Length: 141
Image (cartoon, rainbow, N blue to C red; front, side, top):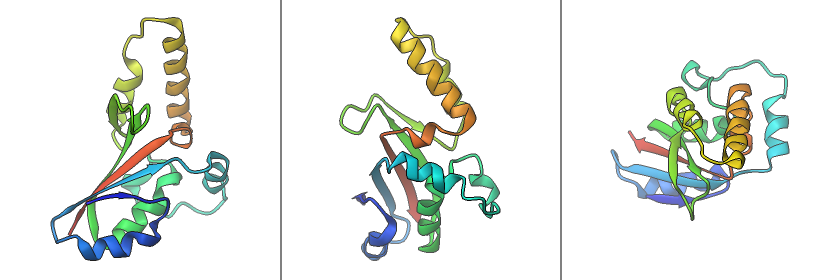
């Protein structure tokens, strides 16, 4: 099942339509990045499961909503540069994939600067707040 939602409120309806073992592909455009940064620095203790601590808080709400509905094998992907002109689908939960995406040689100066900035954003945890498009893939248990 393919969804294009801004928030998790319609997930329950989609969950009812999906059979056990089926996959959900949920496309989202980025949220207001300033709001996501405020959420990231809200000062609360980190109760995030260990396997998701590498992934920015921006996604935790969506992952938690899927887990509450019984979804498993949840993966987060960055569609670069966007859904319509996608050249790459980069798994955000795999550090080696992100390292590879930002480690490849670039031919022109603009590309090198852009990817160097992206690598820095990845290392300091801000990349997800600047991604225009991302998706979640999950299997219904």
